[in-house]
Length: 346
Image 1 (tube, rainbow, N blue to C red):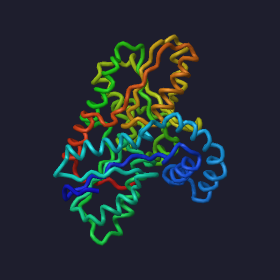
Image 2 (image 1 turned 90 degrees about the vertical axis):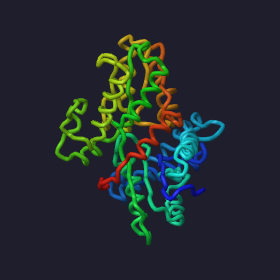
Image 3 (image 1 turned 120 degrees about the vertical axis):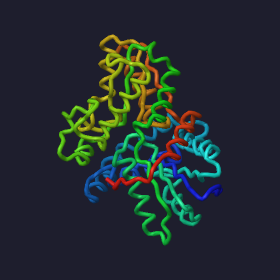
Protein backbone atom coordinates (compact mmCIF):
# COMPACT_ATOMS: atom_id res chain seq x y z
CA UNK A 1 0.00 0.00 0.00
CA UNK A 2 1.46 3.34 -1.09
CA UNK A 3 0.38 6.15 1.17
CA UNK A 4 -0.46 9.28 -0.83
CA UNK A 5 -2.68 11.20 1.59
CA UNK A 6 -3.80 11.44 5.19
CA UNK A 7 -7.24 10.13 4.25
CA UNK A 8 -8.03 6.58 3.19
CA UNK A 9 -10.84 5.29 0.98
CA UNK A 10 -11.77 1.66 1.48
CA UNK A 11 -13.60 0.23 -1.57
CA UNK A 12 -15.32 -3.03 -0.65
CA UNK A 13 -17.11 -5.57 -2.83
CA UNK A 14 -18.56 -8.97 -1.97
CA UNK A 15 -15.81 -11.42 -2.86
CA UNK A 16 -14.76 -14.26 -5.11
CA UNK A 17 -12.98 -17.61 -4.86
CA UNK A 18 -9.23 -17.49 -5.46
CA UNK A 19 -9.51 -20.15 -8.17
CA UNK A 20 -12.32 -21.84 -10.10
CA UNK A 21 -11.59 -25.10 -8.29
CA UNK A 22 -13.74 -27.06 -5.85
CA UNK A 23 -11.55 -26.53 -2.81
CA UNK A 24 -11.32 -22.76 -3.34
CA UNK A 25 -15.02 -22.43 -4.16
CA UNK A 26 -15.98 -24.46 -1.09
CA UNK A 27 -13.78 -22.28 1.12
CA UNK A 28 -15.30 -19.12 -0.30
CA UNK A 29 -18.89 -20.36 0.03
CA UNK A 30 -18.22 -21.48 3.60
CA UNK A 31 -17.05 -17.99 4.58
CA UNK A 32 -19.82 -16.25 2.66
CA UNK A 33 -22.71 -18.43 3.82
CA UNK A 34 -21.35 -18.56 7.37
CA UNK A 35 -22.09 -14.85 7.77
CA UNK A 36 -25.07 -14.44 10.10
CA UNK A 37 -26.31 -11.54 7.98
CA UNK A 38 -26.41 -13.72 4.86
CA UNK A 39 -28.13 -16.71 6.43
CA UNK A 40 -29.92 -15.20 9.40
CA UNK A 41 -30.42 -18.34 11.45
CA UNK A 42 -29.05 -19.29 14.88
CA UNK A 43 -25.38 -20.29 14.72
CA UNK A 44 -25.87 -24.06 15.10
CA UNK A 45 -28.68 -24.24 12.52
CA UNK A 46 -26.70 -22.07 10.11
CA UNK A 47 -23.57 -24.21 10.47
CA UNK A 48 -25.52 -27.45 9.96
CA UNK A 49 -27.35 -26.04 6.93
CA UNK A 50 -24.17 -24.77 5.29
CA UNK A 51 -21.89 -27.75 5.95
CA UNK A 52 -24.36 -30.62 5.78
CA UNK A 53 -26.75 -29.44 3.09
CA UNK A 54 -25.57 -26.51 0.97
CA UNK A 55 -21.84 -27.15 0.51
CA UNK A 56 -22.08 -30.87 -0.35
CA UNK A 57 -24.72 -30.22 -3.00
CA UNK A 58 -23.82 -26.76 -4.26
CA UNK A 59 -20.02 -26.72 -4.48
CA UNK A 60 -19.80 -28.72 -7.69
CA UNK A 61 -22.41 -26.68 -9.55
CA UNK A 62 -20.93 -23.40 -8.31
CA UNK A 63 -17.46 -24.48 -9.41
CA UNK A 64 -18.70 -25.18 -12.93
CA UNK A 65 -20.29 -21.74 -13.09
CA UNK A 66 -17.08 -20.09 -11.89
CA UNK A 67 -15.17 -21.98 -14.56
CA UNK A 68 -17.47 -20.39 -17.16
CA UNK A 69 -16.86 -16.99 -15.60
CA UNK A 70 -13.09 -17.09 -15.23
CA UNK A 71 -11.02 -15.09 -17.71
CA UNK A 72 -7.33 -14.99 -18.50
CA UNK A 73 -6.81 -12.39 -15.76
CA UNK A 74 -8.92 -14.26 -13.20
CA UNK A 75 -12.26 -13.42 -11.63
CA UNK A 76 -13.92 -10.41 -13.36
CA UNK A 77 -15.18 -9.05 -10.04
CA UNK A 78 -11.64 -8.84 -8.68
CA UNK A 79 -10.18 -7.56 -11.95
CA UNK A 80 -12.72 -4.74 -12.11
CA UNK A 81 -12.22 -3.84 -8.44
CA UNK A 82 -8.46 -3.56 -8.85
CA UNK A 83 -8.73 -1.52 -12.04
CA UNK A 84 -11.31 0.76 -10.45
CA UNK A 85 -9.05 1.33 -7.44
CA UNK A 86 -6.11 2.26 -9.69
CA UNK A 87 -8.17 4.75 -11.71
CA UNK A 88 -9.77 6.23 -8.62
CA UNK A 89 -6.36 6.57 -6.96
CA UNK A 90 -5.17 8.65 -9.91
CA UNK A 91 -8.34 10.74 -9.72
CA UNK A 92 -8.05 11.31 -5.96
CA UNK A 93 -4.27 11.52 -5.76
CA UNK A 94 -3.20 13.73 -2.86
CA UNK A 95 -6.67 13.51 -1.28
CA UNK A 96 -7.17 9.81 -0.52
CA UNK A 97 -5.21 6.60 -0.51
CA UNK A 98 -7.53 4.10 -2.21
CA UNK A 99 -7.57 0.54 -0.88
CA UNK A 100 -9.62 -2.26 -2.51
CA UNK A 101 -10.93 -5.13 -0.39
CA UNK A 102 -13.42 -8.00 -0.43
CA UNK A 103 -15.80 -8.89 2.38
CA UNK A 104 -15.09 -12.59 1.71
CA UNK A 105 -11.90 -13.96 0.22
CA UNK A 106 -8.98 -11.83 -0.96
CA UNK A 107 -7.92 -9.05 -0.87
CA UNK A 108 -9.14 -9.47 2.68
CA UNK A 109 -11.13 -6.74 4.41
CA UNK A 110 -9.58 -7.81 7.73
CA UNK A 111 -6.06 -7.39 6.34
CA UNK A 112 -6.96 -4.05 4.77
CA UNK A 113 -8.21 -2.76 8.13
CA UNK A 114 -5.01 -3.98 9.81
CA UNK A 115 -2.92 -2.01 7.33
CA UNK A 116 -5.11 1.04 7.85
CA UNK A 117 -4.56 0.89 11.60
CA UNK A 118 -0.79 0.75 11.19
CA UNK A 119 -0.79 3.64 8.71
CA UNK A 120 -2.56 5.94 11.19
CA UNK A 121 -4.77 7.79 8.73
CA UNK A 122 -6.59 10.85 10.00
CA UNK A 123 -9.81 9.86 8.24
CA UNK A 124 -11.23 6.67 6.75
CA UNK A 125 -14.11 6.59 4.27
CA UNK A 126 -15.71 3.19 3.72
CA UNK A 127 -17.67 2.60 0.54
CA UNK A 128 -19.44 -0.76 0.11
CA UNK A 129 -20.00 -1.10 -3.64
CA UNK A 130 -23.70 -1.91 -3.40
CA UNK A 131 -26.05 0.85 -4.63
CA UNK A 132 -29.09 -0.35 -2.65
CA UNK A 133 -28.49 -0.96 1.05
CA UNK A 134 -29.10 -4.48 2.34
CA UNK A 135 -28.17 -5.98 5.68
CA UNK A 136 -26.53 -8.97 3.97
CA UNK A 137 -24.18 -6.79 1.87
CA UNK A 138 -23.46 -3.25 3.07
CA UNK A 139 -24.68 -4.08 6.57
CA UNK A 140 -22.25 -6.98 6.88
CA UNK A 141 -19.34 -4.80 5.76
CA UNK A 142 -20.24 -1.99 8.14
CA UNK A 143 -20.61 -4.42 11.04
CA UNK A 144 -17.15 -5.90 10.43
CA UNK A 145 -15.51 -2.50 10.00
CA UNK A 146 -17.08 -0.99 13.12
CA UNK A 147 -16.42 -4.13 15.14
CA UNK A 148 -12.74 -3.95 14.18
CA UNK A 149 -11.94 -0.26 14.56
CA UNK A 150 -13.61 0.07 17.96
CA UNK A 151 -10.68 -1.90 19.42
CA UNK A 152 -8.06 0.43 17.91
CA UNK A 153 -6.12 2.59 20.36
CA UNK A 154 -6.57 5.57 18.06
CA UNK A 155 -9.86 5.75 16.16
CA UNK A 156 -9.70 8.22 13.24
CA UNK A 157 -12.52 10.29 11.80
CA UNK A 158 -14.81 7.83 10.08
CA UNK A 159 -17.30 8.09 7.21
CA UNK A 160 -19.65 5.57 5.64
CA UNK A 161 -21.38 5.67 2.28
CA UNK A 162 -23.90 2.87 2.70
CA UNK A 163 -26.28 3.62 -0.17
CA UNK A 164 -26.14 5.53 -3.44
CA UNK A 165 -29.09 4.06 -5.33
CA UNK A 166 -30.58 7.48 -6.11
CA UNK A 167 -27.43 9.56 -6.44
CA UNK A 168 -27.55 11.53 -9.74
CA UNK A 169 -23.95 10.57 -10.53
CA UNK A 170 -24.72 6.85 -10.22
CA UNK A 171 -27.91 7.14 -12.27
CA UNK A 172 -26.15 9.10 -15.02
CA UNK A 173 -23.24 6.64 -15.18
CA UNK A 174 -25.52 3.59 -15.41
CA UNK A 175 -27.82 5.28 -17.90
CA UNK A 176 -24.81 5.96 -20.10
CA UNK A 177 -24.01 2.23 -20.11
CA UNK A 178 -27.61 1.42 -21.09
CA UNK A 179 -27.61 4.01 -23.87
CA UNK A 180 -24.64 2.29 -25.50
CA UNK A 181 -27.03 -0.57 -26.34
CA UNK A 182 -29.70 1.74 -27.85
CA UNK A 183 -32.53 0.64 -25.53
CA UNK A 184 -35.28 2.05 -27.77
CA UNK A 185 -34.39 -0.52 -30.44
CA UNK A 186 -35.47 -3.34 -28.09
CA UNK A 187 -39.03 -4.55 -27.54
CA UNK A 188 -38.63 -4.55 -23.76
CA UNK A 189 -36.14 -3.58 -21.05
CA UNK A 190 -35.90 -5.75 -17.93
CA UNK A 191 -34.31 -4.24 -14.84
CA UNK A 192 -33.03 -7.25 -12.89
CA UNK A 193 -31.86 -6.92 -9.27
CA UNK A 194 -30.35 -9.42 -6.87
CA UNK A 195 -33.15 -10.86 -4.75
CA UNK A 196 -33.35 -11.34 -1.01
CA UNK A 197 -35.46 -13.60 1.22
CA UNK A 198 -38.65 -11.83 2.27
CA UNK A 199 -37.69 -12.31 5.91
CA UNK A 200 -34.67 -9.98 5.38
CA UNK A 201 -37.03 -7.23 4.26
CA UNK A 202 -39.46 -7.92 7.10
CA UNK A 203 -36.69 -7.51 9.68
CA UNK A 204 -35.99 -4.02 8.33
CA UNK A 205 -39.70 -3.17 8.11
CA UNK A 206 -41.41 -5.30 10.79
CA UNK A 207 -44.73 -3.47 10.45
CA UNK A 208 -44.99 -4.07 6.69
CA UNK A 209 -46.03 -7.07 4.62
CA UNK A 210 -43.32 -6.93 1.95
CA UNK A 211 -45.16 -9.40 -0.26
CA UNK A 212 -47.99 -6.97 -0.93
CA UNK A 213 -46.35 -3.60 -0.24
CA UNK A 214 -46.42 -1.41 -3.35
CA UNK A 215 -42.71 -0.60 -3.46
CA UNK A 216 -43.03 0.49 -7.07
CA UNK A 217 -44.89 3.61 -5.91
CA UNK A 218 -43.00 6.90 -5.98
CA UNK A 219 -43.91 7.24 -2.29
CA UNK A 220 -43.78 3.70 -0.84
CA UNK A 221 -45.13 3.29 2.67
CA UNK A 222 -42.12 1.19 3.70
CA UNK A 223 -39.75 4.16 3.52
CA UNK A 224 -36.19 4.76 2.37
CA UNK A 225 -34.55 1.90 4.30
CA UNK A 226 -36.27 -0.82 2.27
CA UNK A 227 -34.05 -2.64 -0.25
CA UNK A 228 -37.01 -3.37 -2.51
CA UNK A 229 -38.22 0.22 -2.61
CA UNK A 230 -34.65 1.36 -3.31
CA UNK A 231 -34.53 -0.98 -6.32
CA UNK A 232 -37.75 0.45 -7.67
CA UNK A 233 -36.54 4.01 -7.09
CA UNK A 234 -33.36 3.26 -9.05
CA UNK A 235 -35.54 1.85 -11.84
CA UNK A 236 -37.78 4.90 -11.98
CA UNK A 237 -34.81 7.26 -12.12
CA UNK A 238 -33.08 5.25 -14.84
CA UNK A 239 -36.27 4.96 -16.88
CA UNK A 240 -36.81 8.70 -16.61
CA UNK A 241 -33.23 9.40 -17.65
CA UNK A 242 -33.54 7.02 -20.61
CA UNK A 243 -36.95 8.28 -21.71
CA UNK A 244 -38.68 4.92 -21.17
CA UNK A 245 -42.43 4.76 -20.62
CA UNK A 246 -43.92 2.34 -18.07
CA UNK A 247 -44.94 0.04 -20.93
CA UNK A 248 -41.31 -0.20 -22.10
CA UNK A 249 -39.86 -1.92 -19.03
CA UNK A 250 -40.43 -4.15 -16.02
CA UNK A 251 -38.59 -5.18 -12.85
CA UNK A 252 -37.46 -8.62 -11.72
CA UNK A 253 -35.33 -10.15 -8.97
CA UNK A 254 -32.75 -12.83 -9.71
CA UNK A 255 -30.54 -15.37 -7.93
CA UNK A 256 -33.42 -16.75 -5.86
CA UNK A 257 -32.99 -19.88 -3.79
CA UNK A 258 -36.67 -20.46 -3.01
CA UNK A 259 -40.19 -19.19 -3.65
CA UNK A 260 -39.92 -17.19 -0.43
CA UNK A 261 -37.61 -14.69 -2.09
CA UNK A 262 -38.49 -11.30 -3.57
CA UNK A 263 -40.69 -11.41 -6.62
CA UNK A 264 -41.40 -11.10 -9.49
CA UNK A 265 -38.63 -13.51 -10.42
CA UNK A 266 -36.42 -12.47 -13.32
CA UNK A 267 -36.20 -15.97 -14.81
CA UNK A 268 -40.01 -16.33 -14.85
CA UNK A 269 -40.30 -12.87 -16.35
CA UNK A 270 -37.87 -13.88 -19.12
CA UNK A 271 -39.99 -16.92 -19.97
CA UNK A 272 -43.19 -14.86 -19.91
CA UNK A 273 -41.74 -12.26 -22.28
CA UNK A 274 -40.58 -14.92 -24.73
CA UNK A 275 -43.94 -16.71 -24.70
CA UNK A 276 -45.71 -13.38 -25.27
CA UNK A 277 -43.74 -13.11 -28.52
CA UNK A 278 -41.41 -10.35 -27.29
CA UNK A 279 -38.43 -10.90 -29.57
CA UNK A 280 -35.71 -8.54 -28.29
CA UNK A 281 -35.03 -7.95 -24.59
CA UNK A 282 -32.38 -5.74 -23.01
CA UNK A 283 -31.42 -6.68 -19.44
CA UNK A 284 -30.07 -4.04 -17.05
CA UNK A 285 -28.63 -5.08 -13.66
CA UNK A 286 -28.38 -1.92 -11.49
CA UNK A 287 -27.64 -3.73 -8.21
CA UNK A 288 -24.25 -4.76 -9.59
CA UNK A 289 -21.60 -2.10 -10.24
CA UNK A 290 -19.17 -4.71 -11.59
CA UNK A 291 -19.80 -7.66 -13.87
CA UNK A 292 -19.65 -10.95 -12.03
CA UNK A 293 -21.18 -14.43 -11.80
CA UNK A 294 -24.71 -13.05 -11.52
CA UNK A 295 -24.42 -10.91 -14.66
CA UNK A 296 -22.04 -12.75 -16.97
CA UNK A 297 -23.21 -16.30 -16.22
CA UNK A 298 -26.70 -16.06 -14.75
CA UNK A 299 -28.03 -13.37 -17.09
CA UNK A 300 -25.84 -13.36 -20.19
CA UNK A 301 -25.52 -17.15 -20.42
CA UNK A 302 -28.39 -18.84 -18.55
CA UNK A 303 -31.15 -16.25 -19.02
CA UNK A 304 -30.25 -15.78 -22.67
CA UNK A 305 -30.57 -19.51 -23.29
CA UNK A 306 -33.83 -19.58 -21.34
CA UNK A 307 -35.18 -16.77 -23.51
CA UNK A 308 -34.16 -18.49 -26.75
CA UNK A 309 -35.55 -21.86 -25.61
CA UNK A 310 -38.96 -20.27 -25.07
CA UNK A 311 -39.18 -18.54 -28.44
CA UNK A 312 -37.31 -15.26 -27.95
CA UNK A 313 -34.87 -14.02 -30.57
CA UNK A 314 -32.31 -11.82 -28.81
CA UNK A 315 -31.39 -11.09 -25.20
CA UNK A 316 -28.60 -8.58 -24.52
CA UNK A 317 -26.97 -7.76 -21.18
CA UNK A 318 -25.93 -4.17 -20.50
CA UNK A 319 -22.33 -4.14 -19.32
CA UNK A 320 -22.01 -2.91 -15.76
CA UNK A 321 -20.08 0.17 -14.61
CA UNK A 322 -16.88 -1.79 -13.94
CA UNK A 323 -14.04 0.77 -14.23
CA UNK A 324 -15.51 3.14 -16.81
CA UNK A 325 -14.30 6.74 -16.70
CA UNK A 326 -17.79 8.04 -15.97
CA UNK A 327 -18.09 5.70 -12.96
CA UNK A 328 -14.70 6.86 -11.67
CA UNK A 329 -15.85 10.46 -11.99
CA UNK A 330 -19.18 9.65 -10.27
CA UNK A 331 -17.42 7.97 -7.35
CA UNK A 332 -15.01 10.85 -6.91
CA UNK A 333 -17.93 13.28 -6.67
CA UNK A 334 -19.81 11.09 -4.14
CA UNK A 335 -16.71 10.67 -2.00
CA UNK A 336 -15.86 14.35 -1.94
CA UNK A 337 -19.43 15.40 -1.21
CA UNK A 338 -20.43 12.73 1.30
CA UNK A 339 -21.11 13.70 4.88
CA UNK A 340 -20.27 11.66 7.96
CA UNK A 341 -22.82 8.85 8.21
CA UNK A 342 -25.21 8.68 11.13
CA UNK A 343 -26.49 5.24 10.10
CA UNK A 344 -26.76 2.67 12.86
CA UNK A 345 -25.77 -0.84 11.81
CA UNK A 346 -29.05 -2.51 10.83
